[in-house]
Structures are given as structure tokens and as C-alpha cells.
Length: 340
Image 1 (cartoon, rainbow, N blue to C red):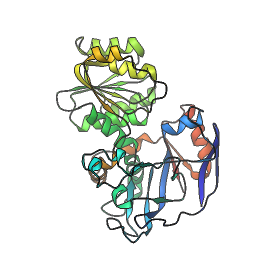
Image 2 (image 1 turned 45 degrees about the horizontal axis):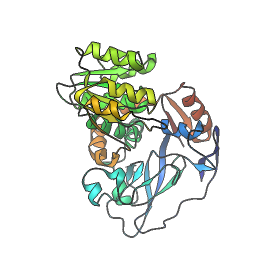
Image 3 (image 1 turned 90 degrees about the horizontal axis):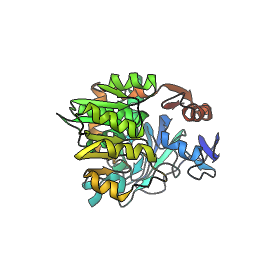
Image 4 (image 1 turned 90 degrees about the vertical axis):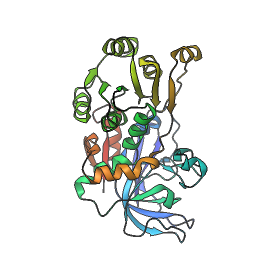
């Protein structure tokens, strides 16, 4: 099969990979219908994470082609959406709603690599969710978004305690930040402030429910949020970038007693303990337990109540994946969908 391999930073190739095979009785083989490039894939692309002939990709939808003898919840022919973290969905941590910390947790990125024609999904019963039927083609981008960015944005909004009567501020206008705006709107937030300097992303943020746009960053961004909230800061803040500036901006924008949901993968972010101490806020984040939300998100998409697929603004065939990486790295694309 054809699949994406990152040889080293900036060197992405599409080449022949071995077809996946059932290894454990709890495995499933999925023939992928679509996959995509994530903002977190840019970390190794930019040399921030190491990459040495690394298989790439962790977002995926497709049709089950084969199942192991112990798989019960999905069957051959099912169209499925899978989380970017493998989970059994039965251990105590999974049952508490944190499937990304499952005792069998395994990141699909760099181990399975779903920027490929097929994928072996371990713990298929706990990781994959079948859709109500075979989706119409126009639903596939939205279902693909549920595999990571929608689920991650939704978790961020939940972690930030977004809801009726709340003002939500979203730091980051990438795909996850935009999905957090969508989630905050669906969760009933009264006011949603999107922090963005990119005109096209601002437009999409407003489409998804943003009521205000703030272009300032850092201390100026914090000051603007406070100005818009009577000097108090937002009740709920989502951090969806992962840089030192964005994280401290998010902390500063959260009112005393408010909630910060952080899902931006951060490197070299150092949080001064004294600032966090005196901020007096709730914090929750990390790798999103997408599996917790998948059934409900799939149904919302199926019923056409949400349209997260608009976050994809560039569609390329798998063979042009290197161009997709380049477009996202240069911010010419928010998120790239790869088709077969």
C-alpha cells in the first residue's frame, strides 16, 4: 500500500509500505476513505520532534475490511471513525472518561500511521465507532474531523467548562481552536471570543459561533480580553496552540475561579508556579479523550446539526501529501484532507 513517511524534518515522502495484517485477535484492518494532516504533524516537520523514517498520520475514517476473532462491536463492511489514541474503553480510566490515558493507550501517530491506504487498529472494539450507515460523500470530511480536531476542540471546551451564560475565549485559530469555537457554541456559551489575526480563519470562527475577534497577542491580548469582560477575564479559556506566549496568554485571560482547557501540544513551555498559584483557576487538558465524545459527535454530524468539515480548506490526493505539509507549514492552509 501507499503511505506517508517522514524521513527527517521537512522531508516527507509517499512510498510503498507493507499492507497491515491482523496481529492480535482484537485488531481490525480498515481500508481508509480519507485521512488528513494535523497541526501536530508539523512538530516533527519543523524539527521540534525527532523524525527518522517515521510513518505519519493519526486521523482516519474508512471501511472495516477484516476483524480479529475477538472483535464484537464492529464488523466487516462497517464505516468507522477512530480516535487518534488506541483504547480498550473498558479499563477504569476509560470508564472515567479519559480514554487517552487508557492502560493500553497507544498513539496512532508514529506507530500505526494512518496517512496510508489501510491501517491496523488495535483494540478495535474500544477505539472504533461505526456510523449509522454508509455516509454520503459530503459527510466524510466532517466525520474525519471527529477523529481528532473536533473531538479535541470539544474536549477543550468541556475542560474549560463552556456553557450557558459563559464567556469563552479561544487562544489559537488553527483547526482545533476553530472546533473549540464550534463546541462552545453547541454547549450554549453566551459569548465566544476568538483570538485570531488571519482573515479567513476569523471568517470561519464567526461561522462557527464567535461573537468577537481579538487580534492582539500576549499581554495586549490579555488586556483586550479583560476590557471585553469588565476587567474580570473570561469564564472559560481554551489554549489550542502550545507556545509559551499562548499558554501564559490563556492563563492571564482566565478570570479568578474560571476554567482553562489546554490542548495545544506544548514544547518548552515553562509555567511560573507563582503565576499559576495566584491566578486561582481550574486547569484541565492534555491529549483529548476523543473516544468519549465520538458517538455523540458522529450523531450530530449524521443529523447535519454541525459541519466541522469546513475546517478543511485544501484537498489533495495522498500522493501530494508533501505539498500538503508545506501548505500547512506556510499557513496557506488551515487543514489538509488527503483522499485516495
